[in-house]
Length: 517
Image (cartoon, rainbow, N blue to C red; front, side, top):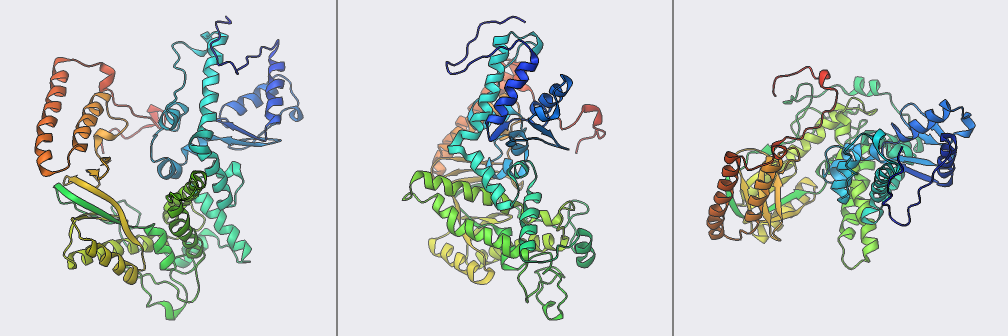
């Protein structure tokens, strides 16, 4: 192998060894020196390869500081955090990192969160010079390190907090799904209380199945989405419930032991629209735990994360805590409807969704009574056209008094554009930020040619401040679309700019369904 010309930063030292055994010993010494080792896909590649290669070369087990497990590789003298497993957790991907990446590979995550990409190879790894290989490996290691450091060590703080809240070891909390976090902290509290932990089959036998039907076969009815009023609407205010589902669990005392309790005197405490009733005699463990986390986030950590009078470092800490709580809370209701969850109880999940539907329909009805124009309603929020301050205040007070839920202003738009489709709209906030929901032009798999045209249209829309501006913008947008149409027609594009980028979740021959949805 050629040595090549090294082009690495000054602080990076390249070491050569006479044998592979010596190289492995040096790597093992480094692993022992650090209390925490961070990898990206180390369970499936780095540590797995090092362990088996050492065995193949005749190392004894006690000489290898790596412990193989069923689905992870641990360190004998430290903690191994595999960032690939952490970034792959859907709840973190959505709520902590705002869906900035779709596939949890190092290249995409690095570009989305850091603006850094892997070294692009133009030939196979086996044909690289030592210098090229060193540069390739160094960039991978640097991206992995930076992922733990960006935004004031956000990822590491998030991992430690998840471990503390879930009552799980750091290695497990960063690898397992949100349902396992919730199971762990519920079991911890039940043991602390000296309570008997029921078997999943006992909960199901005692509580029964769901009472509503859903669009998706075998599930219960979910959230309600009110059909939008198509068109362009100026001066729109969005009100939403603070943590609607966790709030419903707290206020209605929903838990696997309180829904459909054995007390005759509780049977008239019915969930709106369902035959399920809720216990009045005792507080449920889910209601207690999820309600407590919800209150901590809404009343303490979230407000302080935005409090400009606090030092920036302290504000950032509050931000990390409220973000961690948000991740757990947003998944806390769905797990009760997932049959892999140890406290699986369909009536709890169904009751939570029903209370959410009741809350949003009640708010819409109250808005109409107050003379407010409702443009759209989705799950936990309502879009109102030009409501007065007095109307908003009356509505918020009513929700607190009658529903026992916190309703607050979430967004203020200069204008919003709705089509007839639900969960598809575009709005411009008062600060000029364009808020796009559900539109195809925004999605990552869309061809670069289309995305470029879409973003130019979005830039024009951001300039609109009045109905008069809108008419002028329409003409500019028509010109943009005409330009891209002509470019497409005359072949003025690179073929890769028309490609759809789709990640396959399995081998192509494993896909059996070939007809479109």
